[in-house]
Amino acid sequence: MKKAICGARLFDGESFQDGLALVFSETGIEALVAERRVPAGAEIIRADGHILAPGFVDLQVNGGGGVLFNNDPSLEGLKTICRAHAQFGTTSLLPTLITDTPEVVHQAVAAGRAAQAEGIPGFLGLHLEGPHLALAKKGTHDPALIRPMETADCDFLVENAGVFGVALITVAPESVKRQQVARLAAAGYTVSLGHTGTDCATAGEYRMAGATMATHLFNAMSPLNHREPGLVGAALSDGGFSCGLIADGYHVDPVAMGIALRAKKGPGRIFLVTDAMSVTGTDMECFTLNGRTIYRSEGRLTLADGTLAGADTDMLTCVMNCHRDLGVPLEEALRMASLYPADAVNAKNKGRLQEGADADFVLLGEDLSLAATYIGGACVFSAGDSASVEHD
Image (cartoon, rainbow, N blue to C red; front, side, top):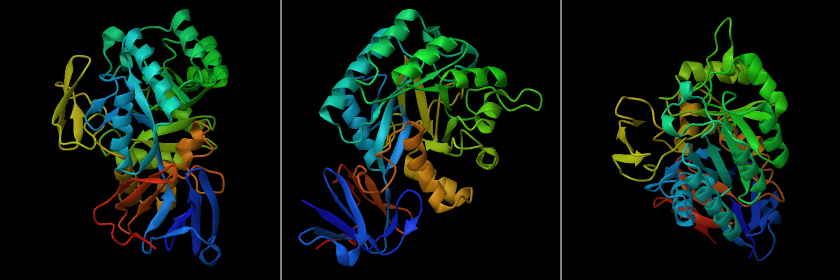
């Protein structure tokens, strides 16, 4: 059945459009038309006073709803994570497996294959963050599990390319050869550099080999120095890199975020990621990862020694932080949460409201509170105070 959302201020992924209705069904977005041209028989959803925008796309989600993907690399675990983030406006996400054993990696890929086959709402693919990283930039990753990429590892990844949807992998030049990056990129992986102390020149060489992204900009990577620009310098100055950014206010100082946004050379963009852990959508105070306890306190997640261990945030909060605290125009903050990450992994049916795109979108109040989340044309979350979104 066709439906049409009318009365909202519509943001199509690029710019705001006034006076348009969004016509959609479970098969996707059918048209953006003047309200008087809504097809006869379509169910009308009034959303006066709301913003209608593309659903958020999060390329780095370790967990949610009480589930950490590393601890539960299963189909049910993926379902729980996707449901948890839908209540914060995320309509497409990459469940992220951080450094673990080969057995857990294989289980995660099998779960991703099952989720892709079943069409789990919100599931976009997988992000494998490790184990092929640099010990010196391990962050919260278990150093005992970090290791170089062997031929068997690369063979396994190539053999499974495409079976679990979008495939993103974070690697460090210290542990992965350029030939392996080229092979993964040719197989369809988006290769991201992260958890590395690589210099700027080497980062450029890996970009030419096929790497197109930098994982959580500034964190766990060689910094920008006046004589050695590091990966930060390479990612900002090379338009072939897109960069994830955790805008929770703890991982990156707002001053540094503002400098990066002003400095980034295109066409690659800076996009938002949450790096969310299992606590998102819960009142959990702690959880375990690789046998170590991670504590939740005052908006931060840390190991006992104070090392940041993922983020206690959600995508809508990151959008509001950028808009309200950094002064980023709302249009750009929304692009950073939808269009830019979708384009970074070539998900052309996501992050935009246009004919033929997937019917994934959010309705926001004027204060940017979330009123409703739609995935595949179905309302998967509706806030209790969203009575002003009415069905005719």
